[in-house]
Length: 361
Ligand SMILES: Cc1ncc(C[n+]2csc(CCOP(=O)(O)OP(=O)(O)O)c2C)c(N)n1
Image (cartoon, rainbow, N blue to C red):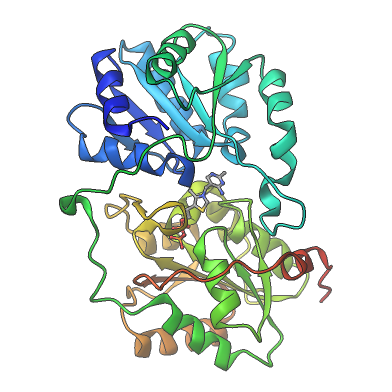
């Protein structure tokens, strides 16, 4: 393993200035070390990998020294930036991609394809790939400096970095807010014999739905981060009644989906997006999403969704608002603040695969 604090210090000594990141649990300790030492190596949390890549390109063009860190599924989001910006404009900087693996029978089906095809994808982008050395820190730093000016993508394996806890001053305190499970249990009780279909997003929302609302008709969207509202729109357009249980990081990843959805907000449709906002990426290690500057309700409203003006922070308000959203029809949006539940198990493969069953109207 690499000593994470030393690694960050060495990157700083080499002149690196920023880590442009969409979190992955493989990079959790590196992200924590960067946040703890933000004056040395600035942590730039990004809504999507496309955003991370473009910011890094701009930084490099302006004389800064960024490093991009994303997970394998996110490398696909960077495709346009890599092939139509980095390549033709000959911009290079280190790109570290965590290589998610897959075991047969595992329910993390979002990683199955790239578990074997990641090198082919890297090659199709016109890059070579190298495994980041996870034993020799000096060599790992050298690999990074080489990739500064070459088309090489560094692949990060699990357990490469030693444990670094986030300093207390950077930790979130959500203790005043209801647990997400309290809202989910309510949905589970009210909708258990209804014709509503629930979509759970990648991250912990889907996992918690499996534990806390087992008797509703649930689609567990293990991957496709950022696509839940659009998936819901597609399903709702054929007459299905849909409620999406989303997360704050998933919500912003492809926020353009909301501007498209707003065009279809009419009473024929039944679609509710509930943004369960725990201000963090719970499932990848609890990194803050740093999105407190966002007025989610204002964004949804100006995109054309039906919203109530209230940020929901308690169960009673939640019950009133979800009833209203259902009664009014159209496409509704709810911003619900919540705190952390203990870890719950992932839905098993057979349950996740039910996603592929066509749900007719
Ligand atoms: C394209 C892509 N990039 C990154 C990830 C890694 N990832 C999985 S879940 C997640 C964070 C989800 O956070 P949020 O939506 O707020 O839900 P929470 O886990 O907090 O409930 C991330 C970054 C991914 N699955 N796909």
